[in-house]
Length: 188
Image 1 (cartoon, rainbow, N blue to C red):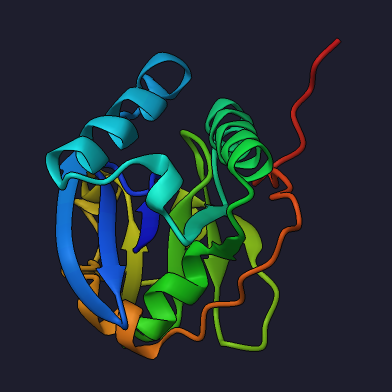
Image 2 (tube, rainbow, N blue to C red):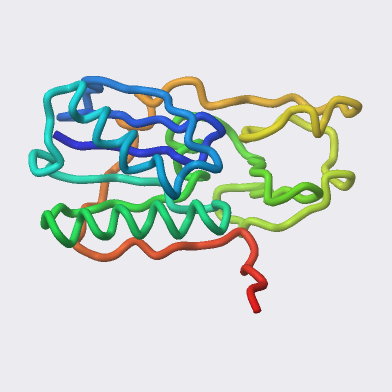
C-alpha cells in the first residue's frame, strides 16, 4: 500500500492507493497545527483503513513550496518514518501535482500576505511577485481567492487526486526529504 500526502493545500489530503488505484482518501485541516497533529492525522487515517505504518511500501509527499514550520515538521516526520521503518519516499513539488492533475500554467501559490510564487511555464523557474502586480489571467493555484476579488483573475483549483496518481511517475528512494522554503527564513 502507498500513501500520498498533500499537506500544502489549505485542506490537507491523505490518499491511500495501490497500483495507481485510489483505495481511500481523507481531507484534514492541519494548517498551523502541523507540529502536533500531522502524525496523529496520518496514523488515524491508516487505522481507519486497517493499515499500520509498517505495512506501507512507499510514502509520497509534496515538500515544496511551503511555509517554514510546515516544511520542517512534515519533512522531519516523513524522514523519521522512512528511516525507522525502512520505507522509501518520493518528494515532489506542488507545481508537479497541478501539472500531473492536468491543470495548466501559469500557476500561483501564496508566499505570504503580499506576495505569490508564480510559475509561468513548465520550464520556467518560479518567481516571487507582489499581489498587486499579478496580471489578470487564468491561473491554476492554491490559497485565498479574496486576494483577487477586485481583479479579473480566473482561478482553477485541484479537485481530485486520481488524475495525479495515474499520471505521475513515482520515484521511490531511501533519500531524505529536504525542506525547501518559498523564502529563506530570517532567524536570528
